[in-house]
Every structure is written in C-alpha cells, then in structure tokens.
Amino acid sequence: MSNEIDLDEIFGKYKSDPYDYIDIYAVHTGVVSFKVEKDAEVNSISGEWQHIPGTPLYEINRERNPKLIHSYVNGTVSEINHDLQGAFVEAGEKLMTIRHPLKKKEIIENILKEVLYLFPAPEKAKYFFALDIQSRIDKKGARSVAITPGDEILTMSLMKRDTPIYYKGEPGIIHSVYFKPGISVEQGTPLIGVCAPDKVPMIQKIITRVKAEWDAIH
Image (cartoon, rainbow, N blue to C red; front, top):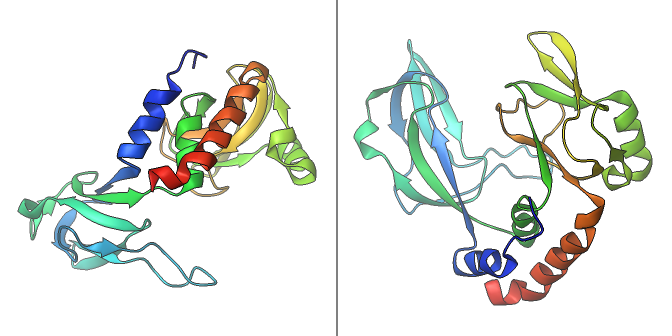
C-alpha cells in the first residue's frame, strides 16, 4: 500500500500480458462432462437484457440432477483438466482456466488495487451498503463519500440475518466498489477500495497513464 510501488514494473507486466487468468471450479460435487476444449473461445452473458447465457463450459451431474454451467467471462480456454472428464469431483475442484483479455477499465482497476486500501468480505455472504452510505452514493456518487474507521458502511446478509459491518482501515473516499448488492461474495474478496487523501495524485497518474498507453498495450 505504500507510495513506493513501482509503476513502471506494473505497467510492463500489463503491456506484456494484458490478461486475467480466471480459474473455473466445480460448483458442487458430481460427475463432470466438459463442453469445451482447450483454446476454445468462450463468451460471457450477453443481450440487451442479459438474457443470453454465456458459453456452456461443463455439465455436473449429482444424483441424476445435471446442471449446466455457463461462462461468466469472455476469453479463451487456456487450460483444462481432461483427466476429470467423466470423473466424480469434489466441490471447489479446479476444472479449467480462462484467459480473459483485459479492457482498459479493468487494467486501471487491477493496478489501482495495488494502491487503494482494500476492505475484504469478512465472510461468504451477500452485502449491501448501509442506508446512510447508499443515500450519499445515490446523491453524489461513491467517490464523494468519505469514510473513517468505526463507520457503519455495510450490511452483511447471511442465513437470513443482517449484520452491520464497521469499517476498519485507513480513512479516505470510496474510490472503487467491487461487489453487487445481493450477490454472494467469497470470504476475503475485496468489497471496496478506499483512496486515502495522499494517494489521490498517484491515482490520477495511473488513470492518465493507462489511457495514454493503451494503444501500446494492444
């Protein structure tokens, strides 16, 4: 989190490899049947109303109840564990990896995660902004909302119980929001990225530089 991060090194990484590598895991126990091969192009959910599902990746069959799993990202299947074709797998077993080409906005967000204070999900649950925070975001946007340690910033919804979540971290503004209200988030996944006042110049420098060098990256 220090101001000493080597931006040249980080930019060099994205110029040489502007991708995210997203591992796909078995959603539950069952017998796996792959629907794609290595190097296959896959698409995420699409359509005007997000009504077109992504590319089918695999089917998993548990107790004669098959479930087809679709891709939630676009990219190329860079790795697939063919040994698991037709095999019984445990929940959470890695099945394949998708190489996802990063858009300019995603590269900016990935680099900013090196600079911002990331507030993680304390448990696997659904999250919502606290009413006061949500009201301020609705009026002026997240980046106008300053928070300090001890502020009630989120509500965690787990097992039909709502629990207030209090902020622990450096004071600053909510620069980035990484969750969608009501969508389950894994424990430890960043929920928000907070920008301390002294980091603002660096944030601007990163955004300006990515936009200027994007043509060189692609």
